[in-house]
Length: 270
Image 1 (cartoon, one colour):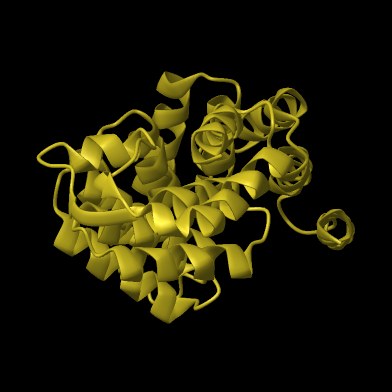
Image 2: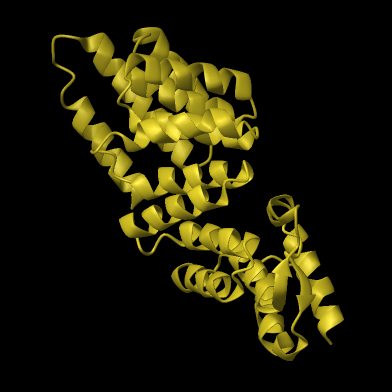
């Protein structure tokens, strides 16, 4: 359905090619093709189309935004940052570009630099997916050790979209950092209810079900980021429930790091 929508947009654009600026119309066609390739995960073909588009129209914010994503997909973060910055310079209200520039900073652990980008995205009341920027904002705060601010951001994300599984998962992580085990378990359960294939949420659910007592401190944030157990003591009476979560991880992603860790956890619980 996504590809059909892209095709429909492309055909609609082609139908307008008799306008006063044929060069811009050509650039728009290449932009739409590039975006379609990005949606398919083909960043090489996307780059080819988008580089043609930017030659035709050098100062279009949407073209620079798409170029940033394409370069990011090719593991070229310097070029990605350059084009995402250009996009927000050309259109300071382009919320998706602010969010993606912030996400690039998150990928590079540039937590402090990421925060204002998400705030700028959220300042645009027309931004259609504020839950994404709120969740990203929460992750930046969490990694700076500002767990209360992270919790608030995740709660705002859930308010914007109650079925946004990533916000529920990350809220569970924040609760885990504070030793609020029942709240954490509830958040992870909600995450997997809305996205049954969410490997990380199943894994963290298995870890957290067993937790009792105080969280590991002062390294709780770092341990949670690394998906290590957040608790100092476990409640072995809940082993069966935890094992079910770990088995689901193994079923969904047996060859992943979490899949192997879940298998180790299952061996200990037997």
